[in-house]
Image (cartoon, rainbow, N blue to C red; front, side):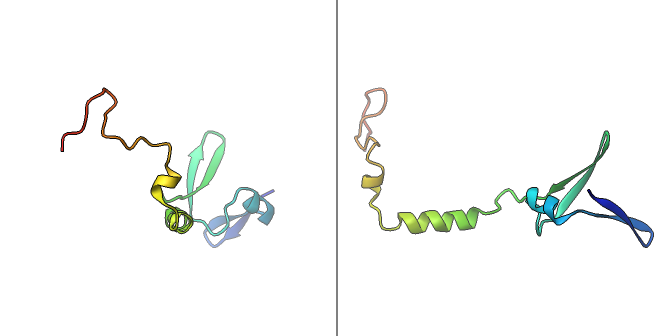
Length: 88
């Protein structure tokens, strides 16, 4: 259960650590929205959060693999889907 605490001219809310962990809210910035029956607290998530780490992991795992071996299901011919051929 969370509790309101008087803090100068405002009030603060104390959220138990178990709830913070369950909601995966550690070390995050928040937005607070007023809703019909109270408030909604949501973390601010960058649209590209975690991309750099994922890219590094993918790049490292694929660095020594040959493209043709890992993508052998791709059609490498010069024919297009409609039976036409590429014009070089």
